[in-house]
Length: 130
Image (cartoon, rainbow, N blue to C red):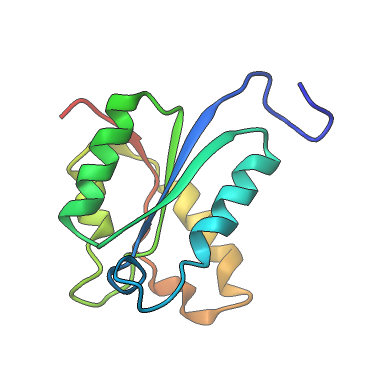
């Protein structure tokens, strides 16, 4: 274990950014690299961010990540209330169960800086077999 790592083993993580506009080059993905850096600071070996359009491409990326055997997959983006924000639905198609307490804590922390964080539909889950 390295001095700055809290993990006892080299775990692999994948970061997936769900963004129609970032996937088409309208703007740069800024959230995915921040998530990747955060995971690295905890000792993860990180791949990505992989930037994909919202919806079915998110589900495909998550299924591929489960198949590849990542220890953790973190998505960012696509959790708002617009009709194109479909990450929660794509994620639910891949998981066995949700872990809502993590999302509640993230939203509570975020509300201190960004009041609209409460509108996020993000939800941590455990990957499944379906």
